[in-house]
Length: 294
Image (tube, rainbow, N blue to C red; front, side, top):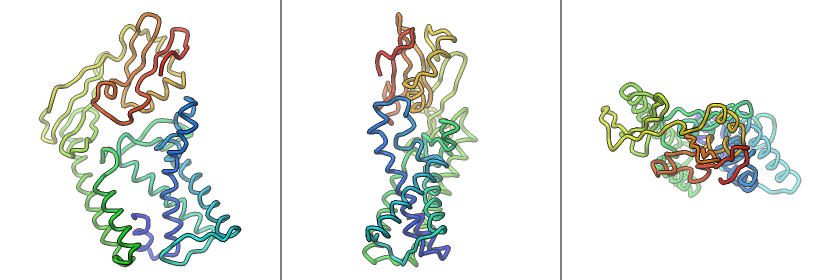
């Protein structure tokens, strides 16, 4: 809906269908897990992974544009659109632009996206929303349904844009307050007035929850960075795909030596502090580098 709103306000209604295609195609990456879950080295090919990077989203959008073009021109398939559309370089660019708007929106939420894939698998986030904003999802679907039914004309899409900007401004102000008042790295929860704080101390990770006023809520937790694992062993296993996969899905990991095995795990997801994502929270490695359990 944001793509349609922006293009309407910009007087580019003829490209709305292309912008929407670019915006929605990225979530097709959920199908990538059919392959990547069996191939740990492809851990970035998941929902919210490589396809949600700057380069990956452009590739996905270009592919979607090509499929749309072939289906429309060769097969004669047409897609519903509130306005006339035509193919060309501008249409391709607006398709990629729609995908990049999707990337920007996902950048606003935790746990973040790998913006600079394939150069890096590091996640980036503005930390404004704790995952998808349910309010914005409901608002978007409501406007979309009313638009399709003809209840809301394109000329009133500015109202959706105003509501979106209003929510974003309010949540951004809350994010700035949290940054100023709370220590270390702060992460939003679904309660906008309650924030998770993660701090790395000498040999351990400290996790606590605070209100915006700086008042601690609940019990803080401390996790040792490594228990009995030597630094050279940590360096030896950090290149193992299963280990990289666990770390990609985690805010931080800890390593524990158990006899002849090393367990790398995400304690926040293991103890239920966080519940997303529910998979790839632990891997057990033998001292020889063999993956024993995932």
